[in-house]
Image (cartoon, rainbow, N blue to C red):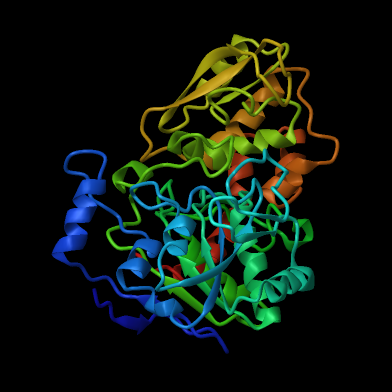
Length: 422
């Protein structure tokens, strides 16, 4: 299969390329076979299109790939296994993010440096490694080109996009070429939502000023990072998907869902995550240790009054149900607690960030035991102290949401310049 390449964007000093969308009868047949539901459109990922083109973009290069369990084809074969078995590509190293390359670690953990038993490839740990230290890892690996292929969840505080950012910075320092293989934003790419990070609150859950729900794919984020945030751009190429539209939720893609982390079991988890993950910054459970993380929220002493107060906010697209559950790990392990379960009935109108704020406001008003985490982790998640201080001062949902609109409008203008799918 022959795919033409065309320039998309040019960042100062950086080469940015893409594989243009074409198709063949063979790829169409493969796409139809991979679709999980009758009549469903079939998205081809960046990796699919790279492989269809015979890996020409990687020809002559020693390649290392940053990936995790989500780096699979429609037949759920991992891309590392596929490339390792293909003589057309010289895959010589794997780089694992948080949770690890094969996904064996829980939140806040990784797999460390090891040899992958399936392929014999060396696996290097990137988690909590950045700058010159990470550049030294790339240098030690001996690769010429670093490839990134990980499924994102669409929220600023999901750490894989900052692994992408850190790897781009490190690749530039190490003199390596960088290639991003695109995958869908599972909660659509229609709009950016929520507060924009203040750099004074930058951490690994938010390095640069983007919105809490960014509405971008990883390739689009790479283009934005390279043009707007890197002191010097890395030599960057992106491989676009074909068949994806900005309004697509994940179930429209025909792709298999592989949990990108242990507490992101379904696309429904991702749908609410950019709002309800804010409860990590409180003394309430965010549902870790249940079968519905981020959809179940609660604590000891909470009863039906929270669900009643939250439903009184008349939140678009979602209803809140009084719920009781006992987490098997994390907060309140083994204890039955009360709270709410989110039931999204209209995902087109559902605003996860506004919903998360409304749930914080009503939890504080309806439960006397409400408290922020002592380390003010909520400020790292929202990217500022304003959300916390406004809620503490008694502000309502509309007032809190209104406070970030000017910053959000600015980010939306910048974001628009780097979108690949319109």
